[in-house]
Structure formats: C-alpha cells, structure tokens
Length: 281
Image (tube, rainbow, N blue to C red; front, side):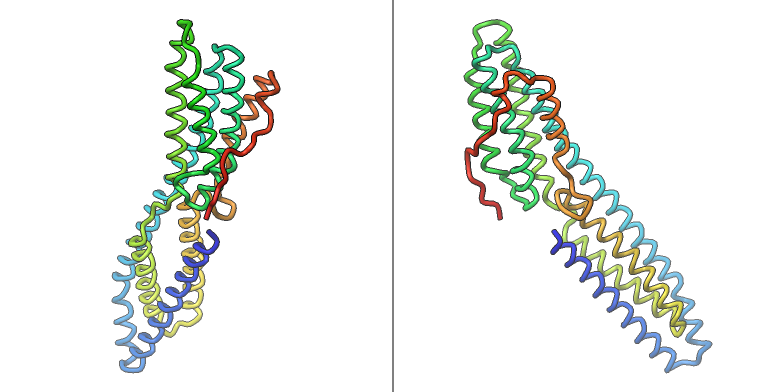
C-alpha cells in the first residue's frame, strides 16, 4: 500500500512540476513577444477558463471523496455484520445437547479468531479467496451444523435459524474480502491527473511574472492536492494505509462479549490449531 500511495504522490508531483514548467514557459514566451498591456489583457481573459477548469476539478475531487468515504464505510459495515452474525450463530446453537453444542461453539470461536487475523491479512493483500485456514474452519462449522440432532421439535425448528446464520456469515465474509479491491478505476485517476496538469498550467500562466504570488499559489495548491489525492488512495484501500486502515475491532469485541457471557465450559475457549496453511502473496 505504501508503494501505491507513493506512486500516486510521485505522479501528482510530476504533474504539478510539469504544469508549472509549461505555464512558466508560456508566460515568458508571451511576455517576450507582446507588449506588457496586451500580455496582461490576454492573461486576464484566462479567468473564465481557470474558473471552469478549477470548478470542474473541485467538483470531481469532491464526488470522488464522497465515493471513497462510502466505500470505506461499506467495508466497515460488512466487517461488523460478519462479526455480529457469527456471534448470533454462537448463541443460536444453545438448544442443542452439550456434546454437540460445545464442539460446535469451539469451532465457531476458532473461525472468528481466524477471520480476525488470517482473513484480515488476506484482505490486506487483496486475496479474494480469503484465508485457507479460515475457510477450513468455516467448513468444519458447516459440517457440524449438518450433524446437529433434529429429533426434538425445538431442535428441528432451531436448525433452520442456525443454517440461515451460517449462510449470512459466509455472505458477509465474501463481501468483506471483495471490498478490499479499489473502487476508483484507472481511467478516473487519469482524469484527475490531466485536470491537475491543465489547472496548474493555466494558473501559472495567468500569474505570469508575479513570481512570489505564483510560488504561493503553487505551494498551497500542491498541499491541497497531495492531501486530497492521498486521502482518496487511502480510503479506496480500507484495509491498508497510514492511520486510516480498518481493524477487526468488531470481531474482537464479539469474541470478548461471548467469552464474558459464556465462560463455561472452558473447552469452548481452548486454543485453536491451524487446519490449513496460507500462502498469501
């Protein structure tokens, strides 16, 4: 992720420097080939173009920020839904005999622990298949659910709800992994950088020989663009980033609440082994 962010910022800085150089060259050429009054009049006529490009660019960045924040929020909600549904599954198996219930609950706990660690690592490298270990624990949970007794009416009725919960867990897990992919396509990034280049070129050309004012405008614009585009990159990669990355807070909180509510038997909370090895790129 740091490499992707660095690449975006380097491209942005190259665009800024290119825009400044082009604008300065055009301004010097116009000053050298035309009287000062004519050059100033021509520069003033750029105000409408700068206003249009700057306004359009500002709207684009604003819409992209809203879009990126929405992607970030949706990802966080998917991780919360996965944690809440897994905790509901843990509670839903309560009517079954202890010999079935306790083993199943231990498998659910192991799945939740693996989802909070192994799956999170898989999401951070954009592995849409998820962790092999997490998938193995989910498969064990599904098999144990299929083996639950349904002799009593309460057991048969409750089996429907347990099955529905495990299907929801699987759905939210897949959503959480899918949200690891960035939502802003490369074509939009091209528009962002081309617009920045055009805007900076027009601005520097408009300022002309007013070097102090041009430097101030370029520095302030650069700071704003670096901040906005950096935020877009980080929000578009919700499992990565500096200070903005999501953490498995919901899953950890669900595990802590369940352990506090159901401390017995202690075998439910035993350590979990690994059922499969992960090879994450």
